[in-house]
Length: 149
Image (cartoon, rainbow, N blue to C red):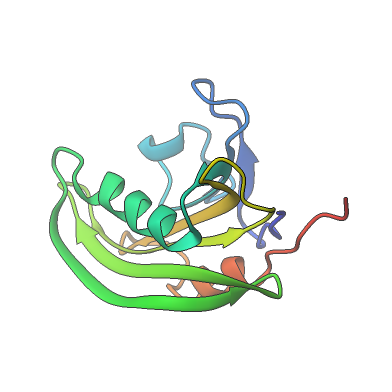
């Protein structure tokens, strides 16, 4: 799965997890969460289903220390890159800002051993001054394309 990087965003490396594709806004940010007002991540993984992966990712984010005010705004099946997927939309806050976020997953292969290859898209936008509009979440998820095999 690939994503289109919007204007004003740029890709940065994650030293702890090099296969994790990360994009941050603004393009002057080089310190990941230290200066980003919005972030997107793309990860390929194995899961029982797209639904369980999207829900597990949301839980992993919202149960981190300092996260509060979690509100689930919507959840359900969706189309991602022309395939059936699943998304969880939610909001949360921490000491730095309030965030709108989505975890969206799509199954990218055939099941084996009780799991299926999935791609997970996580996008979050803060309410910090200068942050992009929350509509960029849909723009990024909507830009997903399956790579030809």
